[in-house]
Amino acid sequence: MREVSAMHGLTATIAPVLFKAACPDCRSRFELSASALRLAIGASRRTTFYSFTCPECGSSVRKPAGERIVELLTGGGVRTLRLHTTV
Image (cartoon, rainbow, N blue to C red):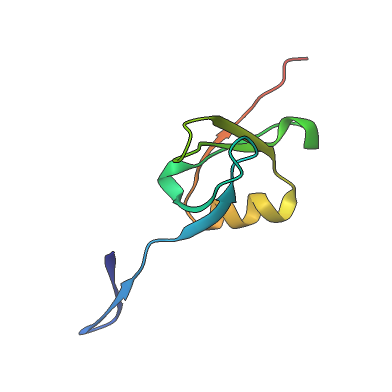
């Protein structure tokens, strides 16, 4: 948890953001912190995805990320990699 000063003399405690996820291999469902996820934004919908390692079975998971998922993940502090295309 982290503390944020909202007004002079007042502090609020903010809980870390957790994201619900599921593993397609072991079918486990769990929550992940922003630091457990990676977001890659490419030039198209096909090259924009998020990834994580399943905490249950250890599989590497990669899932497509539409505009709403990108918005939620970036707003929640997930590290983002912007993929560049060469012309």
